[in-house]
Image 1 (cartoon, rainbow, N blue to C red):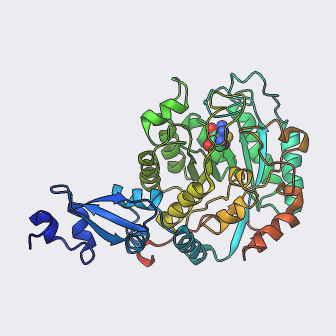
Image 2: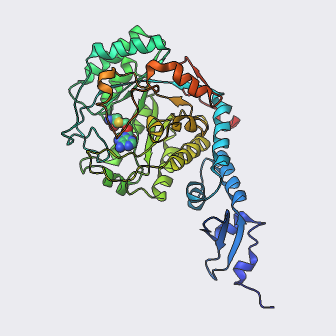
Image 3: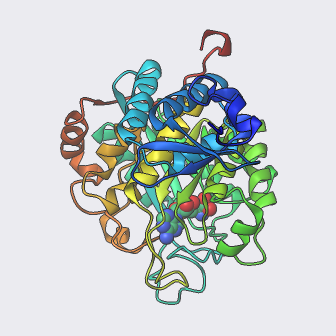
Length: 403
Ligand code: SAH
């Protein structure tokens, strides 16, 4: 009987030698089969390999080696397999480092003025319909005081790039919060600035800095931002912040316009290079007064997949179950906590400005997710077997040898 396929195809027994097979066979995804088809590049003979084995093998490799090849990334990001396998592993890894503890951060959105014009963002400078506000130093301090009483031990000062606050003004705010609450951490999220500014704020007592890289692919970055913004500069800021001793958070939106799987792979590779302490991942959600008003919002499953992969790759990072996740699904944040997230960031801004800090449509901000309703939040967290703690919630370094 004539054997099928070329010698190369016959040589490789895919089911027995998945690693060597991977070198010569290209994976083909067959919808709904729950199985991977591997096609020989020379003769196109197709072979089956259990999707489940391949998924488990790739998850294990990500956990141990902290990196994957492009085919493995594509499989874990796009493959049709039961995501529960991935989420459960991510949750287990999270609990190895942080137990069932969930850290809370009080988010103070201090200004929605912004000099930038990011195409996706509702507070971009050319959105003339945005109802602009900024908080005074006294208002910010009173948010922090209120938050302290509610049990928050980290305050995140976030806003648009509003240059009406000088570098010194921000340093004063940091110093004032640290003076009133020396047991608290202060996180800044004020966008791209000079290293000298970051240094002054660090010396004033700031502990952490959040600056999502948004996408690690240069061409994709340009499609989301105006010409005067550059990915190179944003990445440089992240490395500068790290060099200054901040706990640093990067991150990206899932399914932002024009995003392809290869961009997500680059995000993961960049995260692995930066080794951040925190990673913020949320679905893209359109805002009605931006050029992306008609674009599709990111899906829950894909966002959770990226959260879980990030947890598995980094192990001990602090990963929020984001507000955007809670916006696209009523139990989005709880699902995030079960897929590897271990932080929630309720809104502590004065109630009258919350609607105005509108990065995307229908953002949850005044309901039971807000900081005042810490009991509601606590019950939600308990519903997934976890527990909110009164703690600064610092990054826990690990000895790589003990991993
Ligand atoms: N100016 C600060 C804070 C930006 S707002 C900075 O540059 O870091 C915080 C985050 O909200 C952004 O980094 C972005 O990832 C996210 N965001 C903005 N618009 C969004 C949208 N339409 N959908 C989902 N997330 C959005």
